Image 1 (cartoon, protein in one colour):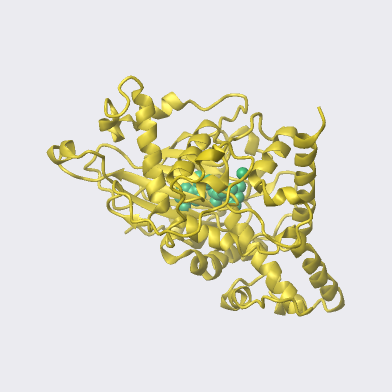
Image 2: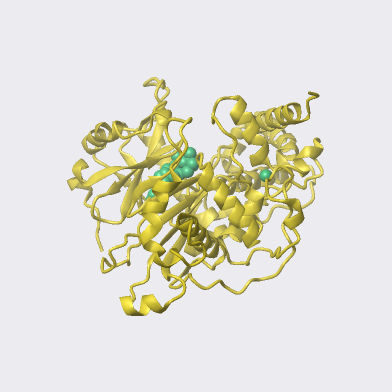
Amino acid sequence: FWVMELDKMDENDWKYHGEGNKSLVVSHLQHCQVLRLLKFPSEDSAHTRQTAEQAFRHILNIVDYSKYVMKPLLGEKYVHSGEVVKLPLDFVRQLSLKVQQERPELRCDKVMDTFSGCGLCLPNLTQLPLHHLRDHRPPICVEIKPKCGFLPFSRHITKECKRKVCRFCMHQHYKLANGKWKRLSRYCPLDLFSGSKQRMYVALKNLLEEPQNNLKIFKGGELIFSCKDDAKQQPDLNDLIQHLWPYFPHSNGLHNGHQPGKAVLNEFIQVICSSLLSGGDSNRSGEPRKMHLSESRPHCEASPFPRDLLRNGNHGLPKDSVLSKILQVQMLDNLDIEGIYPLYKRVEQYLEEFPKERNRLQIDGPYNESFMDTVKNCPTEDDGSVEYAVGKVHQYRVAMTAKDCSIMITFAPCEEDEEHQLNLEKPRFTYSVSILDLDPKPYEGVPHQYKLDTKIVNYYLRSTQAPP
Ligand code: ATP
Ligand code: ZN
Ligand code: MG
Ligand code: MG
C-alpha cells in the first residue's frame, strides 16, 4: 500500500489523465491513484477568484457530499469518495505547465486551480489494483455518462412532449443548433436503463458510433476511444477493434466469419451489458446473472429502437445493479423542474426575510448526516412550509447529481492457464463497477435549469413539429 508523501511531490511522477467541465485529473505513473484538481473560468480576475480557504471548503463539500449523501443512496461498493489533500503550490504550478499541451482545445476555456493547493486524491478507476501483471492484457475501462434514464411523471409538467420524449433526446437537437456537436447522437438513456438486453445493446452501439461526452474507453489507464477534439471527425471503430481483438480471441469465426470485427464489438457490448446488470463486482462476468423481473421500463419516442421489438424480453433492472441504483436516485426528482422552481422561489422569499436561516437550512452545506436526513425525510405532501420547499430542492439537487454522474466499468481477463482458456466458449473477466463525478449541484442553479428546460422543450417543438 502506497501513501502519498505530500512534501515530496514531483510533477514527473504524474501525467495528464482527463478532464470535465469542472475538474482536471492527473494519474500517477506507477500507483493506482489520481489527483482531481478544480478548474476556474480563465477570465476570473484575482479578486473574484476563490480564496484558498474557500477552495478548501469547496473540495471538502465535494467529499462530504459523496460520503454522506451519494454513497448511502448509491451503495457502498460503487462509490469512492476520496480524500482532500493539501499540495505544495510549486508542485501544482509545475503540474499545470506540464499538462497544458495535453489538454483538448475545447476544454481550454478554463484553467487549473494553481492558487489554493487543494486537490482530491482518488483511486484510479481505469485500473484494477489487484490485477497482477501475469496477464499481458491490461485492463479495459469503459466510462459511460448515462444521463437521465426516465420520463418525468410530475403533474406540474406543462408540455406534453416531456412525457413522451426524454430530456437527452430533446437536448440533442438544441445542442446541434447551438454548435455544441456536429451530429445527433442516436443514444437514448431510456434504452440503456431499460434492463432489456436488446435495448441496452442498441444504446451501447449508438454510444460507440457517436460517443460525444457520454463514452470513453481506456486501456491500461490510457484513453483509446472518445469523441474527437475536432467535432467533424468520427472516432475510429476499426482502431478500437484492433485494441479489443486480444480480449476476445474466440470471436474470430465464432458467429461471424466474414465480419470478425463486428463479432468483437458484439462480445465487448455483451460484457458491458452484463456488468451493468450485475451486482457490482464479481470475478466472473461471462455468465449472465439471474434476472429480477419487474415492470418494463418505458420507451422514448425519439429513440431509434424499433417500436415493434419493444415487447420482446423486456425485463426490468436487477435491484442491486448500478443502473437501478442510479435510476432510483435520479427519480428523487419527482416534481420536475417545473414543480421545483416555485418551491425554490418560496425558499428565496423566506431567505430574503430571514437571511440567517440560510445556515440552519444547510442551503450551501455542510453536506453531513443532517443534510441527508432532510433529503430522506422530506414530507410527500406540500404543507406550505419552507421546510418542505427546502427538502424538495435538496432532493432535486441530489437527483441532478445522479443525472450527471459517470459509470466506470473496468475489466481484465481472468488469470487462467492458457489450456483452460482454450476450452472455454466465452472469455472470462474480472471486473469492477464504480460511480464517479458525484459533485453537489449548486442551489443557485435552479433558475438556470428552469430557463434551460423551457428553451430545450420549445426548441424541440419548433424543430420537430414545424410545418414544412
Ligand atoms: P463533468 O464535466 O462530467 O461534470 P468533471 O469536471 O466533474 O466532469 P470528472 O468527471 O470527475 O470531472 O473527471 C473528469 C474525467 O477524469 C472523467 O471523465 C474520467 O475520465 C477521469 N476521472 C475522474 N476521476 C477518476 C478516477 N477516480 N479514476 C480514473 N479516472 C478518473
Ligand atoms: Zn430518448
Ligand atoms: Mg464527469
Ligand atoms: Mg462533474
